[in-house]
Structure formats: structure tokens, C-alpha cells
Length: 150
Image (cartoon, rainbow, N blue to C red; front, top):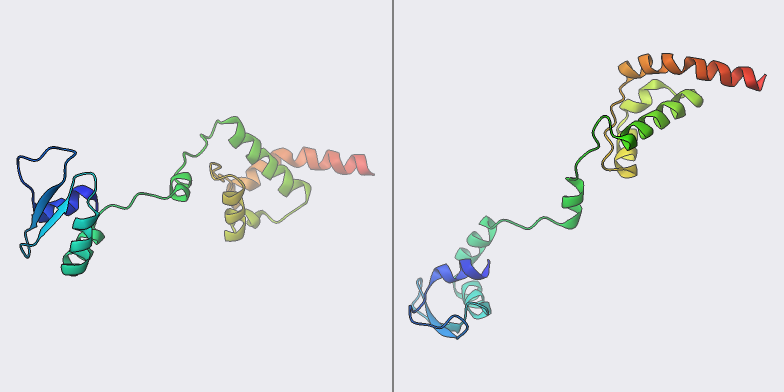
């Protein structure tokens, strides 16, 4: 329950000074509680102890500030033409082609989880279907690699 919302349960005198303390009357039981707009802990404590059901109900309805992790997860993804996006996609293709890995690797949940952990902004645009087309372009690279080894 925020400072302002707890005061909604109390009648506050109209003639108080902003920084000064005042006595607010609880709208639910009539008890007078001392406090100020800056220090509302007495009002919150009263609501917790005497009107717990209202306090819990009001607390559940408030918006919770997102955590740092939640904010980071919502970070903007790279655009398809971003150099970092292209670099990572090309590196993935070279990894799969160079080590002759199965194309289905890009569809596995573990692979998707790995890519999310590696860079939260990267969008894995590879699928088994479009990877076949892309790998045909890199066939020359693979053929050239094997020719050099012989």
C-alpha cells in the first residue's frame, strides 16, 4: 500500500501544513492516527493491524514495480539488418556447417535457451527449413575446407 493510497482510508484536516503532522481519522473505525504526508507508517500499521482484510485487498491491487531482471528481459531485440544480428547468424551457420551438425539443432528448446542466455537481444531467425537454403550457399565453403585438408 503506497503512502498516498493508505491516506484514502483516513479523513485528513483541510488546514494542515504540508510538512507538519496531523491526526487522520480512520473511515472504518473512527480511530485518530498521527502522521504526515511524508511519514505514513502509523497509518499503514493501523491498517495492517485493525483492518487487515482491507489492507491485503488494497495491497493486491497495486501495481508492482518491475525488477531489474524483468526490465532487461524486455530489452529491444536486434533489427534483422543490425551488424551484431548478422554476425551471430553467420557464426551460427558456420558452426552448424563447419561441424556438420544436424539442422534440427536450431529447433531444440535447449539451443533456443542457449541463444537467449548468450545474447538476450539476438533473435534466432534460423529454422530447419530456411537453414537448408542458407547452407546450400555455404556448401562451397565446406567443399573448399575439405579440399584443403586432403
